[in-house]
Length: 156
Image (cartoon, rainbow, N blue to C red; front, top):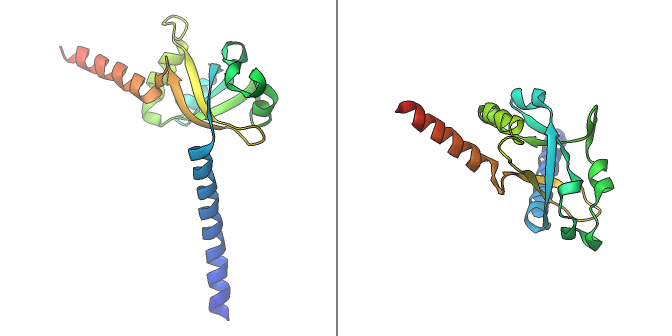
């Protein structure tokens, strides 16, 4: 009887975690994608090597991709963190890219860069940030190209 309690006590969290991962995977596979423009970020999180904290720029986001051509501002705000500078969303970034992304964000106006986030979203469910885009391309592709160009030019 003691062994059964131990198996249940250890098995339940494992099964719960597995079900949660399967649910998130299903959401990522089947929910429609929407692209929203972002602005502003908190460099403290980025330079610590964890997250880009940003606000969604609804004024420059194409609202035609949402139901009834209306941006779901309130649904996204519900799932945001409160910050001094507005509703804050977060996107995970590995530490080794923090310096390059910090530079790209700080110089986005000078370089006329557009930053967007692809979300998996449907009304009634929490939006899930899938990918950060810089000028319509995945952030990693853009940063690696710039880093590769800088590394190549420094060798000459």
